[in-house]
Length: 237
Image 1 (cartoon, helix red, strand yellow):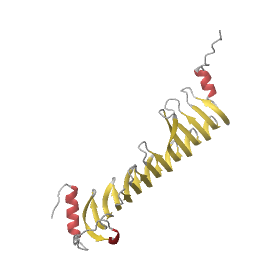
Image 2 (image 1 turned 180 degrees about the horizontal axis):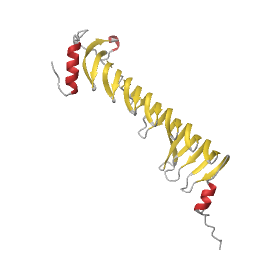
Image 3 (image 1 turned 45 degrees about the vertical axis):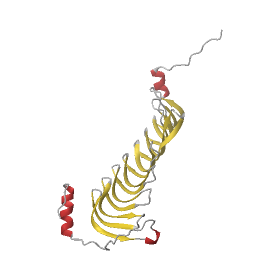
């Protein structure tokens, strides 16, 4: 009868000894089962290396600095259904979190590419949605905020100012079906006052038959009153 050789089990002390390293070392095991392959400096992960987490199966491959991802790196998650890794983030890191320029892949297959600050979307970036919509512009703490362009899958576009994810301030909305543009002031996602005019009317699939004045009279005092009232849920005329 063939003898049975069970897989060797390391004691905590042995694992701790195996996890100590200085200089270059191929494989280092942590007591919790994590595995690191790469460069070291004075017992710190430092340089280029790959770490696989035992519990989640996630993998980070890239640059390290004093034990944390720092510089360029790729973070991937393990998909048990396909038995494959799926890239989650490709880009720059600082002190273990996303910081700088990077590309993030959502489970919905949406993609964000742009600037990050301390782990959140901050600065210029582009979000590509699964339905064909996309936004290109400024972000603040993971939210669309500042100047940007929102392009709808049907061709319509908004160019202008955003606040907390919705149009707010001066902006233009292009309707590519009627070839009409509204240019004016927006409050909490709604156009308040401005001008409607035509553009590229020869290309409009369904041209408007309505007579729309070229300009709408703008009274700045009234704009202020209407805006204040709108913020409180009512209008003054």
